[in-house]
Image (tube, rainbow, N blue to C red):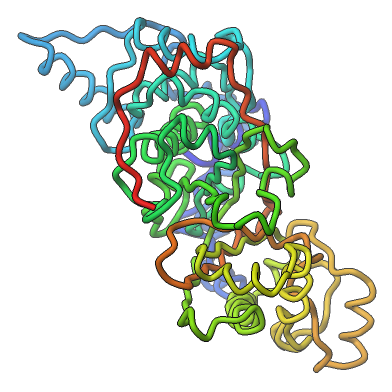
Length: 446
């Protein structure tokens, strides 16, 4: 199925395929021992000399209306749920029926025509129109006012810098992390920016991330084993959305959206392909900027130990308001912290290249700069910075003021896939949309 999808993306829907009798590509030294050539030789000859066969795959007709019935509404919804599950159009949780009325209500909260293409969702490469996004948003249980955020998130995720194809199909545990920046929007949508900002309990946090995942499944046609090849997967693939805690900066730093080049009054959503989470904490009474930097440097080095292929990606540091207090008191700017982390996040050349001969080409076109190559060829103990530049490490404040906690979030390196930020564009009728759909707030304890 993976091969057939890739062939279709290249315009070769009816190409003949020969299947190797192995579950995965074996190591090079085992290929000869398995005598794979003998197993597939007849199939290759037949494919090259025989008549080209048409694909037998059946495809669902696009844009067709589905109807489900039962003795009552719950039974009709149950019939829909079963049909959607059988066609892999679900994340496994109960879905809200995407009726025409519900989808139209969602479309009223965005100033774009229903057929406007926001981006192409890989691996299928299908167009994410505003209407298709709205359908998935309804299924996820979103309120209409969430639509501007979801559309911006899909736009960021389909940006070529994010490398959605790799994120969707890799065997690793990567999942998109959404970060909302903009206190007014966060307040309007009741997005939790405090205790357990990544946890359950808030409809916005839970359903916006779920809507993005359903777009990845239903528009991108990514299903486990076809062609999402993650060996184990991750619970982060359900929902991963947090809000920047702007009050936590205490006026010392500009918010993330400004650091990313947007105006202060422009809310944004950032998308990062997150892989590992390394969490640490320190007693607030002994916390200093230097101790925080040293601990974060240790996290960065452990993440990169003997994994030079991940070099050059954009990583993220999440700091709780309490952990940020010493940085604010001691007057360090965001760029100061980035520079300090760049200096401590270094490894010896021999570890960076895993004891192998230094090579400029690491993976997927990522190249080590000449000055690093020259340094390593001259001295195996010479330090190598694990970030391409200081700005490659984003630093934000999020969560509650309860403990001096910080998280180093590493990214996926077989892309490369980068931290991507897009503006959230609110409609002119924003206040009306909020008024028409109020009453779903969950208390946020700060």
